[in-house]
Image (cartoon, rainbow, N blue to C red; front, side, top):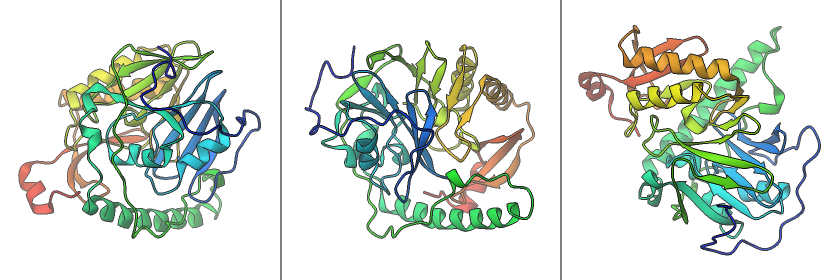
Length: 325
């Protein structure tokens, strides 16, 4: 069913015409906006979350709305005049934080049915405070990395520079009630391109990816990232993660667009590596080391080539280190 055929709420006022050409579109302040493939824009909060705007002939689709720190609705309005469907990859705050800024812009807000109730909670103040502190530290570490890189390596890319952190004292993430529930196998017809819903639990029970068979494009959310996979947070399940990534590895994949970090795209080989890694973690074939996640929560870290899998630490270690946000 096409996203615009059933409308719980009417879309907002007419938007400017879409900008479909050009190698790069410069974002405003907090965002980095550029093309991620034919008819797809990456709307990145560099170092934090990656959102993707997919342009069809009749509808546009925004996959994740980010942190809610900047106005992602303004970025979307600058890129498309089409009726908009927002699809959240899962219920975590950093992937639905911008939903509130899309009221009046989006025709629908769609989530996997397994997360319908989970999307109704606003972000608690302690989580926001912890992330604000983390974001400032991330910027400082990135500046140190750039200084080292400039001595002769030149590996960093100015297009994805981690932004200075704005004033976050009044940062809030509101809950926006979903207007459409998605299930495995649903097809989202944007006009000229069709995306299939894949239920991919593991990081969260309501995780979903969007797969375009005609092009081999996969919008992966947190099921695939370039960095540390959080398989230790509430609702995470290593066995489910292994099943989901094994399934993705079987797809005739062209490009996977990832949910986090500065490296936003990967190939089929990376997906196969991740699937093999999760199978090894599930089967106890790794030698993890004790570590902490970015919030300081104790974890077991399983290192692989180019990424890591974090799993829950023993209870004694968690109690010693605190539960974290």
